[in-house]
Image 1: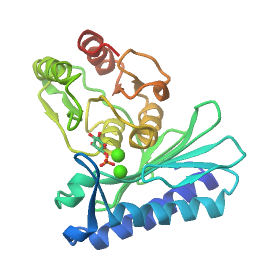
Image 2: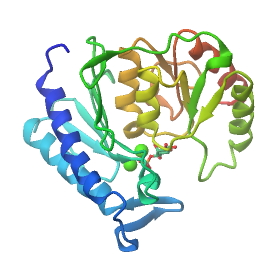
Image 3: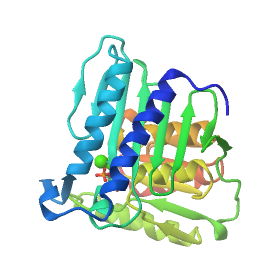
Image 4: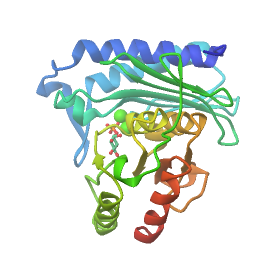
Length: 267
Ligand code: IPD
Ligand code: CA
Ligand code: CA
């Protein structure tokens, strides 16, 4: 593993502290620990506790940076850099004791360039890390995007619509049908950050999801790119911060999926 910057070390420390919080509460939530933020959109005491721990660690180390966290913690710094935090990605899984969830922490500069990304899967103690220009790693071992080329062997990942989806349900179904034909299987694991991290290390051959937020995808996007993959929105544009659609894959699978998103979605 290459030299780690103080930014990466801080992100790792924050993710591990939050990871310990999730491990302690996994399978132990009571109804009183869960609240509906919006229709079909939940937050738990664990999301909040993780966010408090992560934001405190980052604020202490980098007081001049800004912060954007899913559960509302904001810090308005002067450096132009922004930390983007999903304290618990896969909250619904966590509530149901389905053991797939992660912590996602990213740092971008004032030009929307991603500098640092960490996705941590606490139950497996899997730590995915990336820094701009330095490659992507899983537990300090370099990782690479898939090298598979035959459609019949592809394992693809996606996220399915779950709220306010009337405007794109048909697009999502059409896309699914198409990818079913062009893959061995499709997974909907319930954590976009894990989907992207698994795409970065070649477990998944590609990933697409509509209606994501920067905290869901920022760290994962850097992981995939640093692992040699391609990430765009559904229109094929590289600035993923200007839409909510994410499409990731290799030089073989990205174009295969892009041809389908262009056909099915009007984004
Ligand atoms: C969700 C997960 C899920 C994706 C949803 C996200 P949350 O994040 O990443 O896989 O399909 O769009 O909202 O709410 O569990 O942090
Ligand atoms: Ca999320
Ligand atoms: Ca979350």
